[in-house]
Length: 231
Image (cartoon, rainbow, N blue to C red; front, side, top):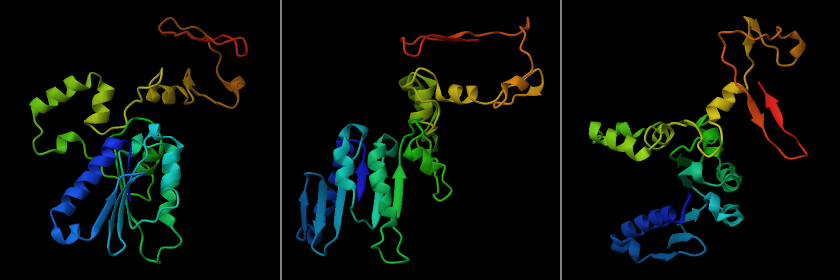
């Protein structure tokens, strides 16, 4: 069983399997295929290859199609672009109670990281799984020319980090960078004393210092929440 984020990616996987099968006459005579509602190749011995589309734009139907499938090998391509509800339906296949004891499912996922902390992010930081980090510079044909071209095509440092360095980097679809928001949420130290995030009364008195830089943030909301200013 395989799942991809986009229909074009799922069809590419299906076409490669189909091309391999058509090159073998013995397999070709014993195979049937279909492409709706998902891609499937069926063999005479009962084995099947199924490829699903499970991207964020595929809707709840993707999760409904995948839920309850059986699999010996499970591959997820571009998982960071697969909808989280589809991932929620896919991952229980790893603990299928109908499988024979001692025969775990082979589970492989790959993706260009987007920076969002979704299911792919969770798996990469889960000690139960083995992570392999393979940036573009590991390619045998990578050189300074390809490096310059990659940086030029990326336009932004975050885009280069995602696409070529395979780094989580900063998520680009929000107003503020994810790394900056996380840093701002940590307890601070004022005047050498530790900040106590539970008891503001224990924080040292704040007084303006001439050598500090101060930033004013304004959150402009509707009547229900109101406008807030924080320095």
